[in-house]
Length: 137
Picture 1 (cartoon, rainbow, N blue to C red):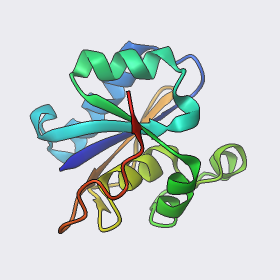
Picture 2: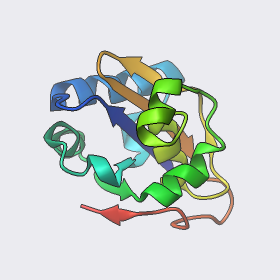
Picture 3: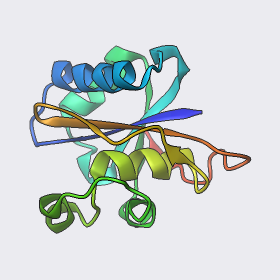
Picture 4: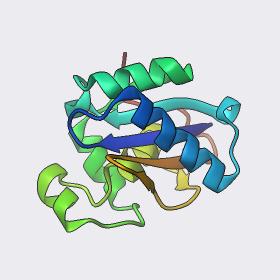
């Protein structure tokens, strides 16, 4: 299972979300069909651009609770002090992807940034399926 973790500035459009996800896929040589779901922090659950972006890409959207974001954030490879201050994790996209992909998951690479959206890809490892999954929409 591969998870696309997404973070964004408030008000990012669905087109911007889709472009960032596609950019991350291209950078890491992953096809959209290999992605099982998209994940974002639960506090971003009202962001219309993220919700519509997931729909446009045909991906199930998982809302990751803050406690799971923080636990997975320890495995992030990118660190933004601004994001730590605002969200409590070093990288929203990386933490969301890692949390949704499970405890044994690993990042395929560092987050990809395009305009107001970041996307990171995480791959499930071993038998950790579903252990990190939050609420789905």
